[in-house]
Image (cartoon, rainbow, N blue to C red; front, side, top):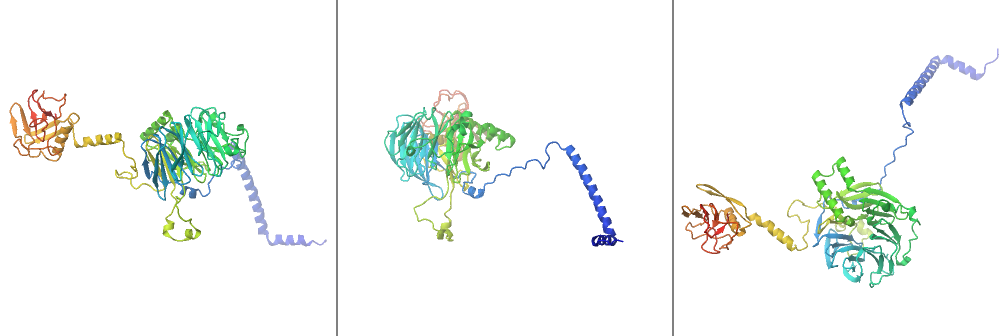
Length: 608
């Protein structure tokens, strides 16, 4: 018998030793086979039921974009739902700008310009200029905040030194200007400023510190009246737009007014800059992000468009049209129906008077957020995540138009803060905090409003001081206030209570104002209480109002006698007429009588 190999021998010994284990192995193999068969059947059934791609094959949902440090950025923006302060002009405020030198400049419809200085908390008034004899069309501040200019329909441009708040130049343009903008950058030899003609597409370039002679004229760049001129100080290029929806890039004197060479396109067909022309709209506001790489615009079709400056490509579109707000109100109520209807009426009036062109848009200091006014308030939009992160002033009864944003800490003439000062626990130094502020104008209001991180202390009280009266009231306002206070002292009816019953009387405060006021004030003060009818003539009248009861006493509320007040519609041609009794012409005091028969011949002063 041949010898068995070592491995076969060991296997037989293992089988004889573990018969139970072999049975378990066979059993598990059978169970596995059954499980596989069942799973195959289930898969076939699922395949028969499922229509379309399998869930595993479907594309995964895109991860939502998140802006890193968004909360830090938002902490440096105003957050109060209501405005903290408001200040006045004598006429409707149309323009507002904020400079890098911590000045806020406001302009009103009557041609007045006011300078305000941002302080650690709030602002303070600096200076007031009667800049133009007519309406101010446009204002502009230079990129470094040193120069300010305004143009008006008096065909003039006024130039101001911002830091010294003084007018330094005046240019007679010789045409009605439309837009203006400083187009020089720090370090340029000439402080060049651009102004457009209101009725044409011409752009005139001047030396802001020089004379009336233009340095250059663009007469073929635009064919329609301009709507915006804005400088991009980072790339030293200027962007302008007109009413036909055309957008153009150009440069200032240092680059000989040519097309900028630092952009990534040569032909406009390679960009999305024809977007406005395709939509039959035009930009009413243009601004640049602090890094110069984004352009934010508001169109005449109420759409906010964000472009990339270097490529001209469209980045974001936000629809702020009235139809969108109507749909939003129907889907999820934003305001009470009556308030929503009132605000919609204001929006239609905005379009009717062409005030939409005054609405502007601004970037924050990070370039990640844009802010602009809508019918719901001031929207703060994150352009990276495409979300509205905050709405300011939703409760306020104002329609925000232009706005300017201040961020950071107001600079003072003091030593620079060192690292040691920052690290110290000095409470005085810790109190110096940023005061982000939005300064905005409102439709048909002669006030500008300030939104900060602080809520107003008291808004319902009549003594609330958040609306500062820094201007004297006009004659019309004084007259309106006087007329409003007049009727409080008088009434148009009275009841005389006597021991024989009540006498109901009708008074005429419009026809006889002093007489009725005298009667009503005496009655409210209890002057007539306890008086007797000291004179009764049967078939004629009854008389009272004398505290002495003799017919010789009584005086008016002014301490003496007052003049007669006759009116053609009030006569003694009927009984039961109440009139003032006197001792002659213009000797009325407190006594009065009531006739009981028609007495046409009686000459007296009527209350009724």
